[in-house]
Image (tube, rainbow, N blue to C red; front, side, top):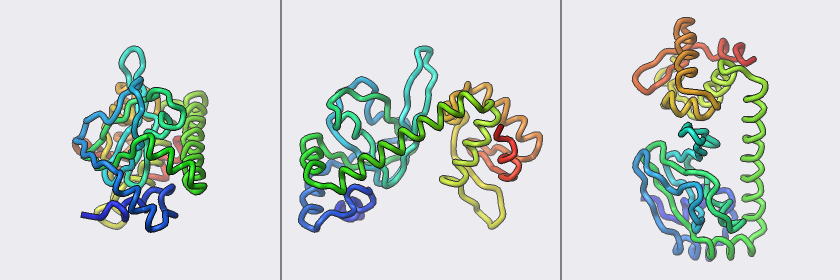
Length: 227
């Protein structure tokens, strides 16, 4: 199993650690393993730890009053979450749920703040991460206002294809392991509307479905649908 000090280097704000600092932080980490669907933390809970993802995926989710999910971000190996509550001392602002089996390290609030206050690189990394998440939120709101459901779905499929898709053979379909429920949460739509749009895309032979896997056959055609 990879040593914690090596895994720390996957997280941007820990990449510049000196050897002695790396050893100290590594000794303070607590390992967590989540099964698919397990909740790391819930909206409203007191925030006591920053979490670094070793392997797997975590979705950051807000629940509407009628129970629908809005997925704010999907984080993977090298990403971190939970820093907002540690920085402002307030409760968690969203749920964090494992999309698949996920391995993480937790760093508690006191040790995290001590580290950040004494490391300019860490401060810059945290600010950069927060900035990226704010930009994603802005982009999401812009899409909600200016793009149709079909346009938002096409855009999200393209984004996922570029970041998480894989091909078994060269020039073969791009495979995405994502549920229709999660897709709906990512684009601010209902599962029924996503199912309807996917049916249209299947009829055009641009995508196909295989269980919980979406296969993209024509990425260029999807790009023309963003409007």
